Length: 225
Image (cartoon, rainbow, N blue to C red):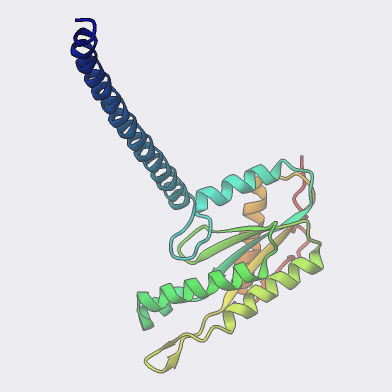
């Protein structure tokens, strides 16, 4: 009895203990798989969130900030005591490009203009597509001479685009209006004045840059009130 009882009792106990260990090992593996799955879902969720944020802030065709995102950044910039410049950039006779060469060619022209803008700016600058064929750029910390150089670089970059449709070259030119900003500024006043100078460039024959308007009542650099 002293030999048989421990054997008879111990074997089922060992079997039960082994069975429980197997169950625990399986449960541990399943839990590990669940954690890995949750981690993958979390990464996927972060990527989806980043993609949605990207889509909500950027124009898909040109890669530029959309109007709302650009104006939000401009509003934040307006509170800083740092000089800069605001450019308004508009494609000349863009409706004629769409009507004569088709909307696909028009999109190609917009993408080309966007490249001309992007490659002319510094890393600290920001830019956006604020209308159908209208862009804007904030140039951080520039003086007037550098601002004019950058604006001309954008204009010449667009004019040099070699876009063709049925063998014909598609003419792309820009009118640009710019305003210097000294320190903090009011966004609505800066936008209004840059827009006014843009339309003066249109009236001057298009394909040009207007940084100042020689009138007695011309607005000066927009500064903090």
